[in-house]
Amino acid sequence: MLIFPAIDIKGGQCVRLYRGDFATAEQVAADYMQTALSFKAAGCEWIHMVDLDGSLAGRRVNQAIYLDVARNSGLKVELGGGIRTMEDVAFYLDQGISRVILGSVVLENPELVAQALVAYGAEKIAVGIDAKQRKVATRGWLDVNDIDYIELAQRVEAQGVEYIIFTDIGRDGMLAGPNLEQLCALQNAVGCKITASGGVTDIRDIVALRDKGFYGAICGRSIYKGTLDLKEAVRVCA
Image (cartoon, rainbow, N blue to C red; front, side, top):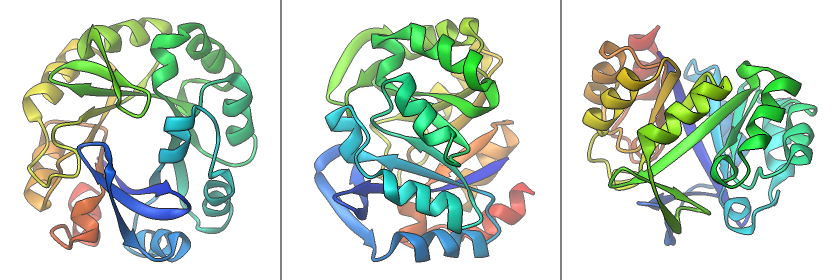
């Protein structure tokens, strides 16, 4: 299982949110590059980055930061937030981002998913599915739709998507453990590679996700608060 340490950017700063609430943004690191390099030193191969400003604005906002990390940290960058057009997809993938995450646009413009898969291949495209009480949330998690998260996952799998990142918003940033029930239901419903996001607290959560056969685990607040030893997490998943 891959460990994806996370850096979310808001106003150029490294922050984390509680349950996706932008009003709770808390700066968790002083320098994004030093933080990324510390992840590399711990043995990580990937970093998960989110443009929080972009997710609200519906456009690229902090792009210079992500390209800097992709070019100079030695990590593969998985990036989401504000990627709504093929121009956005091409901008990032053509300049060194390893994988882009399509979120809100999956519901609003499903044809874009198909276009991106054809243009760049399934390895470069992930779909982010974020849910509140099973219902898919979009637009920076502000809009909750009627569609069930598993139904959306099955739709995108039928389009050829191979990578899904699932976030239970109620667990995100809360250090309350991942929602294994919903994650396992998703894994049983589709054949995609599932990355678990939200709630990872300590090494026991990492082991539980690893033993269930998930592709990856995103770790944010647990790293910054010191409840998870990142080097140990990488080691037990090797």
